[in-house]
Length: 209
Image (tube, rainbow, N blue to C red; front, top):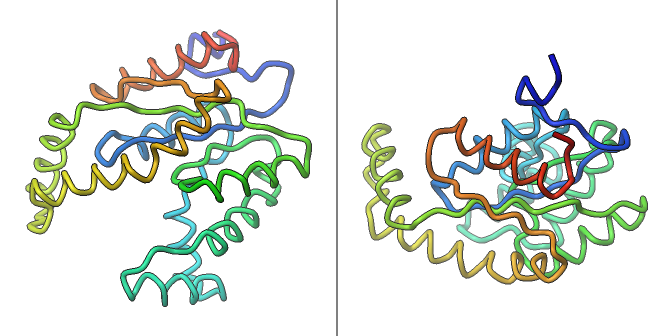
């Protein structure tokens, strides 16, 4: 059975694929990142997971992040960049990666460009999961009820969506100018969204069908 028949993606010319995935809270980004990374045989690298891992391991970076987060502040670009740079220099990322949650600012975009330029690499695509905000609110309210998250009210969720749009719009626009953005409807079943992502990447020639 071929890789395509198994729902897997093949990487052309034996090279790795370097992707970003972006999507609003509730759009299923984390789930799709894991599925896509497995299909491509590359690590899914989440800045949120890296922050938590460094904190749990008590590293110097982790202590700095913990001090910032405990004050309710955002982790500054310089620290985020340092953590991502360190992760991308690890062996398993040398043949490709899928970044989740980074970059989120113009400076982070520039730093990722510098990191990739040092090894003569570049991004292949930015997968953008789109979702109707009203549907996302319904999904997150349901999840909040199931998990007992009383603080996740509709107003709080809508505010988070607004903040996401404000923060990510410039980053997505920057990559749109480079012709790298692949927009995919993020609503529906996990398998259905995964297939839409696969088909969109195949169409762009990033992965062979």
